[in-house]
Length: 266
Image (cartoon, rainbow, N blue to C red; front, top):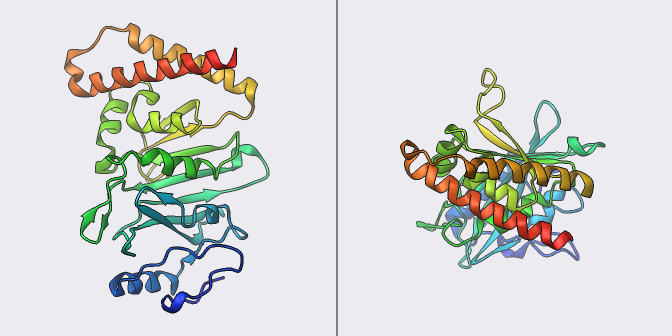
């Protein structure tokens, strides 16, 4: 079902549900109208979990959540755009991806196939990373995935250069900025998809798994702790330069957080 792309005049969104944030600048209105006249619709919570992110506040911005068509295996395309307080819409999505749901925990996942943490909004960069707003964004995305599901995020784009270098040096995934971000939103084990299988798997990406239950959470947390401790026990490699120093710094942060997490369980 497509929404009628009649943006001005406060078109009602859905009775009892807040209206999605809509652009007020003519150029942005035309861009959104073009999207809604083709394959995209405004996400609604009663139709898809992505609707829970509609209008979500991220500091001075709000999310505009759009749903696209299904791919050949039934996963649904999605994109998240930013709107500022002046009603200006980001020139590109902060996240473009896919969402899948199914009867078993492992069938439920979200993938970000293109991530831009600092899109242009009205000619200015909306730098979510500098504003400390990446984690709230990914907390919202993680909320689309139940325990036992997983999140995948690309690290081929320029914004993910630090993670790409650290992963390429074979440090534990959680010691990369992307891995740490996934750790913060509930992932406790990881898989690095660093080889695209004939192009079918898309860009290189990091996959983070959310534990199914408390027992599995404890098991995976213990394994993650051992992995981080082994990383810190190895001598520092001067040839790894700033990437190695960054990885070891994050390893110490993760280890401290894991220690605090374990202490709270006791």
